[in-house]
View 1 (cartoon, rainbow, N blue to C red):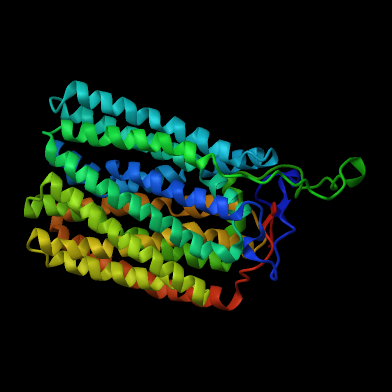
View 2 (view 1 turned 90 degrees about the vertical axis):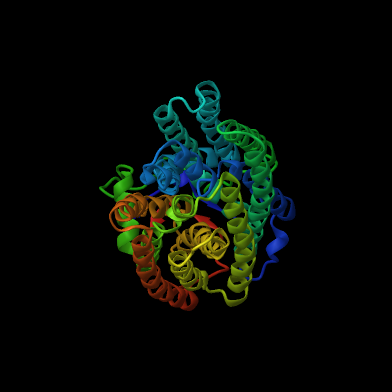
Length: 465
């Protein structure tokens, strides 16, 4: 066996969970689900005043003619979230031993709000007189903001694994993402009004300020989760029970060894990463939908907020739809359906000739995004429990492996758009979406035939060879 997580003391088993238990039997189950759903709602209520798919790209497009900068925020978002997750997984192990996962998530989140506050002050002081400084400041601040969020991701998913029964998770993820979409819709209306009521750049200063206030306040909601106390490893401790010395137990493996161990041992993980990598490559098209509308169709700031509103409304419908499909079929059909819808959206973007004809593009974008979110939130955890391995380490490994594709997509998309236009970007995305649908179908078949949705919750430091 190769260790890919924390020490044996971090092992936690909830003996109350088995195939015959009532999924609501976990302590504080209803309260915790309600709190986590509200957390998603209030976070989205603030976050979408700083939306990386509509608000931030349009702000950057007003400051610089370089499309690569405007379209890079989705890549920055994914990269920054993924980079610190192995450090976050180690921290999560330590905080888990004290039953304080939620506090780790709160500390990391609050630290990431500080760079956004500095950026708002910078914009207010400089106005639009120094666009290069504003572009650099905003991109760095958004990177640090999401970097701090990423450090708390392993603790967040480990907390979900502890307080929500496996049979409830598909519906929980759909409820949580639906609440997120509702919060985003409400904030999109607010952002649309703010951006239309004030002059540039004060409209964006006001939008960013409202968003920052809300994403700080939501931490108080998240801390209302009641985390169960840690359950010590039942194995006896002391010299008599110490494991024999040897190469397998003499030291803790480095993060890259953990990734390699999971990659080699789990064929399902490899298939999922391939599918997600293709979806990441296809993401070069959605990254430039708003920028394309500004460049080709002279979309206004209010139009940008409308695009975000449409995408979020579609995401709401998509999350509810995918959640019910998975809960009933026990298969992640969103891997196939979401990618096909994404391809249709990229196809529609090539023929858009007016602002209203862009709306269906953002409908497809919202439904496709909901499928991607369901994939990222549920499948790494499901594979970890299927292998009886560390949830935090699987989530960290998954997000780390897809980093290169998140980096490459907007960079390559920006280069293609500069040489051949946005239609060429959409064409490449369509091909990648179709390949992702085919790869996703193999994952659906594998999980449908071999997954064990009701196994006891385990955080185990071993991954089978």
